[in-house]
Length: 171
Image (cartoon, rainbow, N blue to C red; front, top):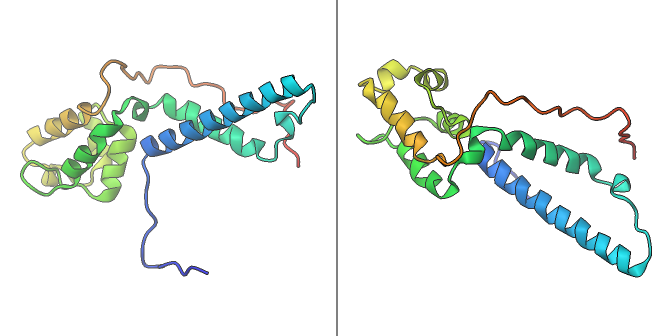
């Protein structure tokens, strides 16, 4: 049995990584189900429907999380540009911003576009990011990672993520 180091905090992952991981899982699962459906048609035998699938609650939650995250700014991020962004956000050099791991995670998850956003995410920003044009430099650095072909708008209507009353989740 493995003994965990209790002094070490858990690793944090960004919404971008969660979205990438869950999209891969959902696509793989859908491809497997499609393949099973083709086999069912050729054999003439009926297999159990997905409704009887043991992990259908997990599957539903994963699909809902993917749907939600696709409507957030993290869906528009160029994944290859993240390592340099994280380095610059964490760096304490003249060109860096000296953010903590928690602040960096918030920046990556929310991809702020307005100065008021970074004031909410970064503690004591007036003394830590001086001069004030560093605030705009931080926003510009974040903008370089966002795919400009798709503009995120928060004015979209949230999708109904409630379970239909007809859906039954029993084992």
